[in-house]
Image (cartoon, rainbow, N blue to C red; front, top):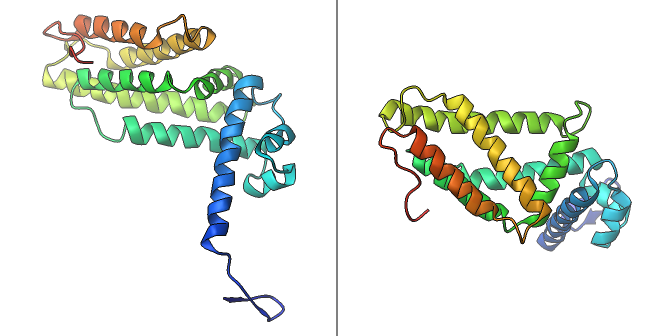
Length: 219
């Protein structure tokens, strides 16, 4: 029980109330993914997102302060999930790193709406005034840092050739991943994103490993 401003005693919100709020918040985030994927940020409407969830725009704004806040929350939610699933631990070898990236591609191939949203927003965010501009700048910097650190460890251990430019390889890999992803979104049934990335990773590792080995056979 809790005392109100008037001095009367009222009930505290029950756990069910919070559960309903959390469930509604997740539904808003899921709906926003579809809208941002279809129309981009600027053409998406909070009113339409709220309508799809079955609430008013005011109800949506109870959970998210603005469309900009909703966008950032969508991106941060998907990024946090990917970090926990694919980048929670450091990779011990370059081969392990590329197997992890391949699994990320396999996972993205199951999330057409989210992947389409990423492509649309990444293109829009080239404008420095876009609310997601700073997010994408940071994302690519962090992705490059994580990959180049793993590759440098592989150079130091002798797995990779000593002349490997780890930053250049990491940046190239990020570009290939996103380029393949763009082609797949345009033709999900006709373009094998996962297979193409597997072939790329195998060729790359054969070129830069001291033993000339590619991806593990079970990758």
